[in-house]
Amino acid sequence: METQTIPSGLGSRVQEISQSVAGAIALAALGVVAGFVSALGINPLFAILETGWALFGELLQNYIVQPGFGLVAAGYVWWCDDYNPLDRIQVPSLEGVAWIGLGAVGYELAVRVVTLMLPLFGLSHGGHDGQMIPTWRIFFDHPDIIVPGLVVMFVFMAPMEELLYRGVIHNALEPALGSLGRVLVGGLLFGGMHIFLSGGLISLLFTSIFGVLAAAGYERTENLIVPIMAHAGYWLMFSPF
Image (cartoon, rainbow, N blue to C red; front, side, top):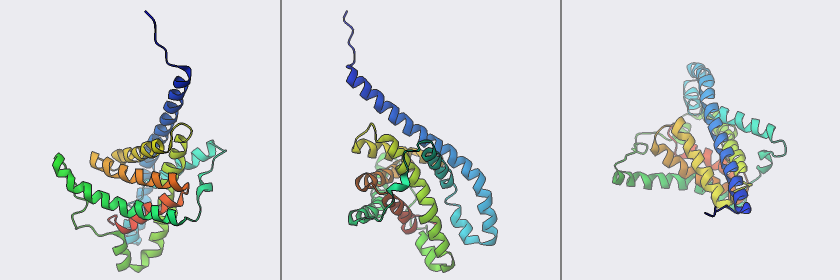
């Protein structure tokens, strides 16, 4: 009986894709572990700050995992010394600005549409019940935290998360996958992370949508500022305080 073999070219291609995806999954998993460690280490510090500056400390409680992401991204850059994602930070073009808007506003619209469809599948989501106050409204009512709040979101936390998931994980997929593959796999890995850090299939679904939008904007513009601004912009405009 003749044994069928995989052509060497196809076999090497499959191996390249498998290694690339496995590397990206490993980085995402390491990010989850680092996020948990960051939460354990930083949450008490933010709680101490909350006793002296209650509202700002409460804001910081929303961003206890991002420092862990930043450490993983920094470790990757150190290990892979021929690549620096900071080289892909630049002033956005008009197209980049459009992608920023699509990432933030488009994601919110997608969440609202999908939320309406969830009961058809016996699911529900209470994140848009009108009871939660968006961050921008808190800033408007409490001007003393506007500057530190914006710095936390736009300068530190969103960049650390996007450096890992777009700057590092997306880059790890570049050698083996085309544009569509990088966007879909990177977006799903971003969503998969939230199963462990946020919990539930609904979180996976919603955050995967944002992950795909952010990855598409980054893929199209090759500018890390685009997903960073979209991410922080969503937190500011729509995320509950």
